[in-house]
Image (tube, rainbow, N blue to C red; front, top):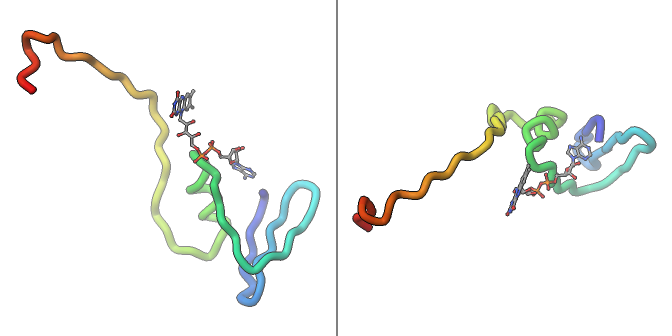
Length: 65
Ligand SMILES: Cc1cc2nc3c(=O)[nH]c(=O)nc-3n(C[C@H](O)[C@H](O)[C@H](O)COP(=O)(O)OP(=O)(O)OC[C@H]3O[C@@H](n4cnc5c(N)ncnc54)[C@H](O)[C@@H]3O)c2cc1C
């Protein structure tokens, strides 16, 4: 998906190979959702900041839960 043009009565989605006209558009772009949102007229300041998670396990004797 390269561009999204909301023309009111229809949405035009431009890809590398074609142009798709539709009335509704659901985006499931995962970590690229913010970039897809920027292709639309929607005002949204949300930015996805991916990072690797680190998880630690508390020693059993220190675990109060
Ligand atoms: C290395 C790694 C390991 C992981 N391991 C696990 C695990 O073990 N268990 C677990 O539960 N979760 C895991 N996750 C997290 C999991 O992958 C995500 O939470 C899940 O895939 C999110 O699903 P999604 O459908 O929202 O997005 P995604 O699966 O990311 O799908 C988004 C899709 O949009 C497409 N896309 C993006 N931009 C465009 C564009 N401009 N045009 C066309 N297509 C586009 C992408 O190509 C992709 O196919 C892992 C993630 C990573 C990176």
